[in-house]
Amino acid sequence: MHDLLIRNALILDGSGLAPTQGDLGISDGKILEIGRARQQYKETLDAGGLALMPGIIDNHTHYDAQLTWDPLASPSPALGVTTAIIGNCGFTIAPCRPADRELILKNLTQVEGMSLDVLMAGTHWGFESVPEFFAMLERQGVAINVAGFVGHSSVRTYVMGEEAPKRAATAAEVARMRDLVLEGVRAGAVGFATSTSPNHNGHGGIPMPSRLADDAELRALVGCLKEAGRGVFMLTKGGQTKVEFLEELAAACGRPVVVAALLHNNTSPRSVFDDLEKIAAANARGRRLFGAVSCCPLTMDFTLRSPYVFEGLTAWKPALSLAGESYKAQLREPGFRKRIGEEIRNPAAGVRLFNGEWEKVYVENVRRPEHRKWQQCTVAELARATGADPLDAMLDLALAEDLDTEFSALLLNSDEAAVGAMLGHPNSLVSLSDAGAHLTLFNDAGFGLHLLGHWVREKKVLTLPEAVRKLTSDPARVFGIPGRGKLEPGFAADLCLFDPSTVGRGPKKRVQDLPAGGTRLLMPPTGVRGVWVNGLQVADERGARPELSGSKRLPGRILREFLS
Ligand SMILES: [Zn+2]
View 1 (cartoon, rainbow, N blue to C red):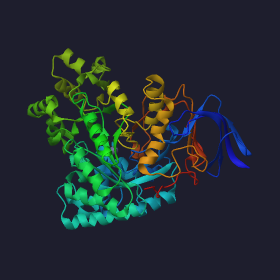
View 2: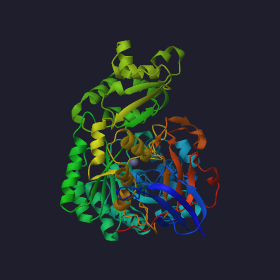
View 3: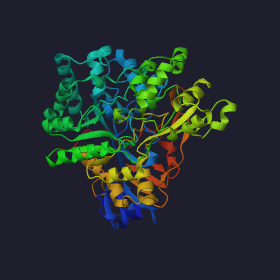
View 4: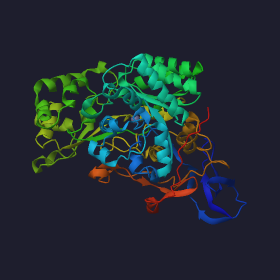
C-alpha cells in the first residue's frame, strides 16, 4: 500500500504544456504515478475542481537567520512554497566567528527589517563555517527544502573583521576569501551571492561589506565557481554595475548569473528593459544570464524611525548613524531637507527606490487624534492642504508624533503594462520575494499566489501553465535543482493543490510574533487547499499545519547536489 492518492485534479506538471485531468500517487516522499492510478493507497483525497502543481521554488529569500529559530520558514509553506533559496544578495550568517556575531547581525538589521534585539534574541549559533551551518539546519530540521548561497558580505567580514565595510581588500585577503567561497560551494552551497546596491546598508548606515569590493575581488571570487565546476553567481546590482561587466564574469566562469533586482521605475522606465536586452544579447553569445524580476508592486510600510525608503539617498547619509534627539534635530534641519529634496527631484540619479512620487506615499496610521483627518491621505494631498513642500509636510507630521506616524509607499514595479512585459520576457526569472527580509516593510512571500491570481486570472497576461512553469521548472533549471520543479514519476512529491478561481493573497495585516516582541507584515493565502513537501503535508486550507511546530519530523531537506 502506497501513501496518498490525489484524485481527479487538473494537473499542471510544470513544463508549461496544457494541463491534463487525472490522479497523482505518492509513495515514500516521491511521485509514484500520474494519470489513471493503478496502485493501491492508504489515503485518497478527491481534488475535483482543483489544480495540482509542483511546489513553488522561491529563489530569492533571506531566511538565513529566521530558520535558526523558526524551522517552519513561516509564512512560506502556507503560500505554496516548498523550496527556498537563502543567502541572496550575499547576506548570510555563515561563516561567522563567535566574536563577530553581533557584527554580522548588525549588517542584517537594516536589510532584513528586523531590529538588532529581534536578531540577537532569535538567532541560534551552533556553527562557524558554511558547512557547519548547513549541518546545523539539517540536524534541527526544516519544513521546506533549503538551498543556500555562500554570502560575500559574511565571507568579507570573516576575513577583514571591522574593516570589511570600510575598504578594498588586499590580495592576501582576497585569497583567503577564495578559500572560504570554495569551501562553501564544495560543501553544497548553490552558488555565490553578492550585492553592489546602495540601498543595502547595515546598522547605523554602514554599507554592506560586499559594496566595498573592487572588480578584481569580484572576478576572483566568482572565479571560484569555475574552479569548483558548479554554482550560480547571483548579484543585486546598483546602477554603477553594468550588465557588460556581469557578462564578462559569466564568460570567465562559465556559470549561470542571476542579475537582480530588475524593478520597474517610472522615472527611468526604459532601464530594466535595457538590462533585459543586454542580457538577451549576452545569451545569444552563449552566456547564461537571467534577469530577476518581481510580479509584485514594491510597497513599503515605514515610519521615520527606520525609513528604508530614503536610506539609499546620498543626502540621507548624515542621518543614518544618528538616533534619538540628534536624529530628530537632523530631520528638522533646513539644509538637510533641501539636499534631500534636490536629490529626489534630480532625474539623472538613475534607478533608485524612491523617486519623488509623493502621490503614491500614503499616511497609514497617525498617533494623535488631531491628525486623524490625514489618515489614508497621500503626502501630496497633505502638502497641498497645508501649503507645504511634500518632504516638509511628511517630516513635520512625523516629528509632531515622535516619529510614530506610519506611512505606506508604492515605490517600484507599479506600472502594470511594464511589469507584464517583464514577466513575459524570455530571459526574466520570476523572483525577488525577499521572504524573511524587510519584515516590517512588506511581505511578498506569497508572490507565487499573486502571479497565479493577479497575472493569470485577473490580468490574463500569462496562461496558467506558463505561470506555473515560471514558479517551478524554470527556477529548478536555472539553479540546477534535480528531481524537483516538475510533476513526473520519480520526482519529489513537492506539491501545491489550489483553486484557480480564488487563488491569490489576502489583505495585509501586522502581527507581533517575532522574538523579543518584534512585528512583521503578513498577507495570508487564498485558495490554497494543500501543500506537501517530500510527500508530507505541511499546509491545508487553514494555513500551516499546527502539528508541525515542535515536530521532530520536518520534511524539508538541505539541498546540496545540483546539476551543472
Ligand atoms: Zn535580497
